[in-house]
Image (cartoon, rainbow, N blue to C red; front, side, top):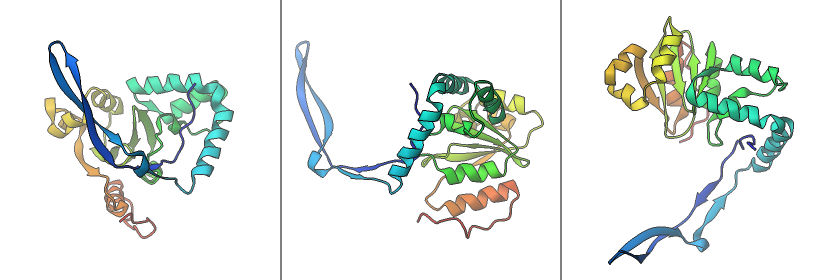
Length: 224
């Protein structure tokens, strides 16, 4: 049974030592090595909101646990094709799911950053879920976002044929887009990407500039 995501994460710090042993394969002995964490050096830092996050996840599970098969079905569908949030909401309503359930949680991961997601959602006309990504259609263009550290926000120009854009996008990869393999970047109207840095203000200023919004980062916390 699929449960709701726990919207928090744990920090684990450990020291590792390299160890190994010889294994015999045929007539030869081969050294196999691996790293093992020292139990006495493992340190786990619990987030301040852990209890609140667990309680929220439990309440969500009690409310929507009976719909876990439908949620898993939708997860499998968005692995294959982008699905608009409005479409997911209508399908969920047909299953009897309360309209206060945020269907964007279907592919949400515990370490996703809500500030990136919410900023883009605020300036978008439509939202699509696809694999582990969110595709925002805005007046200025299309923004593809994986709100997670180590990823980047991909920017594309506005298109008059969104279906064609989605068809091309789902048949390519981020690497292919960056390299313009098969002219896919040009066909998609690829403009560039914004790497998620430690300072969210830099990212926010560029996103607001792209969306045509006033650039004012004073209310955004600086992670540096």
